[in-house]
Amino acid sequence: MNAYAPSSPAYLAVLFSLLRVAAGSAQVVTGAHRAAAALPVRGPFGRPSRIVRREGEPPLPDGMIRFAGRLVRSGPSNGQQLGLSDAAASAGAKVLAAVPLRLGASQGCLLAASDSRRAFSPAEMAGLARVAQDAALKMGEVDVLLDAERRQLGRTLHDTLGQTLTSLIFAIDALDEHLESGERRRLTQPVRAQALKAVRETREVIDITILPVAEQETLRRIRERVRELSDSGVEVRFRNDLGKQTLPLDVADCVYHVAREALLNVRRHAHAGHATVLLWCNRGRVEIVVSDDGKGLPRKAVPTTGWGHFGLAMMQEHVEDTGGTFIIQSAARQGTRIIARLPLPGVRTS
Image (cartoon, rainbow, N blue to C red; front, side, top):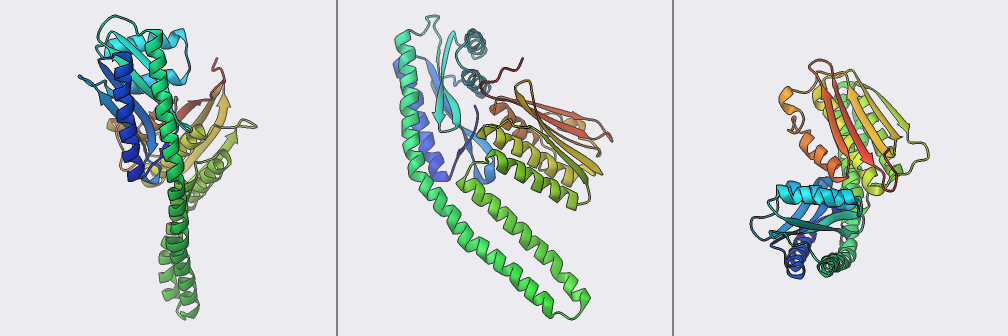
C-alpha cells in the first residue's frame, strides 16, 4: 500500500465503517470464507498507520494483507497471480483474490479468500472490483466533506497558537533590549530558542493538516533538517542528484520521512561528527541514503526494533508500504547507514 490519507479521529471512524462494509460486501459478492479491506492513513503529526477491517475466521493475517497490497499496486500480471497463490497458501486458504482500493493518492487493497479449490469466477471478480469502486466513491465524498474541516483547523492553528508564539518572541526581544546586564540577557536566549522551535513545529503541523508534502517542499524541508543538525555541531553534507526526475507525492513524502527520522536519530543518539544525505535516481528507483560516523546501532536494534525514540520499525513499514526496500547497515564505533529504495510508478527497474 502506498501514500497516506490524512486523518482525524472522526475521519478514522468513518473510514473504519466504510472498510467494514467493503469487507463484508466482498464476502457476499464472491462467496468467500474470509475477506479484508485495508487502507493506509496518516495519524497525528504525520505518523504512518493503516486501517484494516477483517471478516471471517480465522482472520487474514496482517503480513499477507500488506503483501497483497504491494502486488496489486504493481498491476495485473502473471507474477501477481503467482504471488497471490503463495500468499493464499501461507494464510491457509486455497484461493485468494485482491483488487486495489483507492482514496485519492492513497492505495490499499480489498481481498477475498476461499477455503475451497474453486477459483473465483469472472462475475465474482467483477463484483469484487465494483465493491472497491463503490467504497472509493464513498470515501471520496467523505474526504471532500472533511477537507474543509482540516483546512479550517490549519487556519485556526495559524491564527491562534502561531500568532501567540510569534508575539512571545517579540516580547522576549523587547525584554532583551531593556536588560542592562549581559548575563541577564543571555538568560533569555534559551527561552527564545524554544519559542522559535515551537513556531517551526506548529508550521509543520499546519502543513501536514492542509497539504501533502510535494517534491520541492520535500527538498526544502530536508535542507531545514540538515541545517538544524549542522547547528547542533555535526558537519552535514546534502547532495541531490535527482536532476529533472519528478517524484510522486507518496514517494516524496516517504523520502522526507526517512531523512527527518534518520537525521533526528543522528542528532539525539549517534554522537557523530559527520553525516551525509544522498538522494538520486537509479534504474527506475529513487534512493535516499543517510549515513553518519557515530557510535553505531546496538545489535538488538537491527533491523526492526526501536532505538530510543527513533522507531526503525515504523520507518521500515513506511518504506515498504510505499513499495520500497529498507536497509540498515551499522557496526559498533563505525557509524550507521540508512538506505531506502523507492520505486517510481511506470519506470522499469532493470
